[in-house]
Length: 256
Image (cartoon, rainbow, N blue to C red; front, side):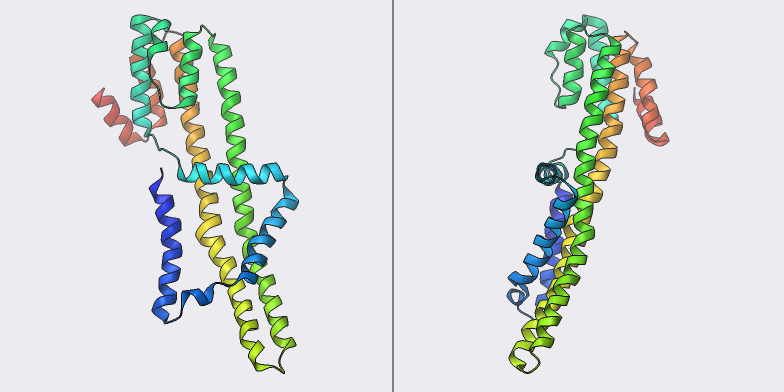
């Protein structure tokens, strides 16, 4: 689990509630159904106009899963694991790779393909296709959360206009002026909060996830092709060191 995502989202809303309490207001007074329906419902409907229902539902699920339940693997650790597999391949042959335990499903599939005797060309084509399709799915989820973050403030302004119209329509009744103004302000508040605390941060995290996972999978593909071709483990490590920043590259090569 990416604890930073959980802390960021929950902490962001906690800060808002704390600010309300410190100001001396009751947080329950900030909870109203109409502004929530306008902002959340309106933004969701606007996104459905751009995408299909299936894309919307799957993107929301994938986005939340990818941003929260994601285990970051340092590139140096990945390269070390690749070097160990290359050494196993060199010493015991491809059959021994069937017994290697690998947590990453993409990496595991590539190793199994080597053990099953796939050629380097078939290995590269299959894994690159899977990498690109997975990247497209995460990228679509990123775009939908970005659209939600862009649309929510706009729908908040719509809710504000509804509240103002209601307020000005009841100027003869002072008791209805306050609720109308509250709806107007809360709609803007909801739109800004949902956009800046939830939707846009998750959108950016998904973009970072897609970039990081794409780099790692490209590294894995290049490594597996070299392993399939029978390259020396030390040579493979040297080749993959180019994926690291310069200071990390020097430390890894010195340790090796």
